[in-house]
Image (cartoon, rainbow, N blue to C red; front, side, top):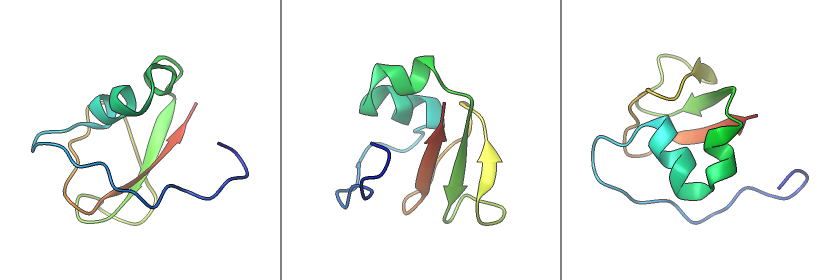
Length: 67
């Protein structure tokens, strides 16, 4: 929710999770209205890397969705 702090609870899933898969887990609107995501963490080439739905995520990644 805009203006509210990010969730402190991690989402744990199997290996091979993509940004699109994560969007569907959180809420179907995240997937339907997806424009891009920014990621931080082990799979990011640099902080705040802009990625698409097919990007594979790694343990410890932080994802910010933009719709």
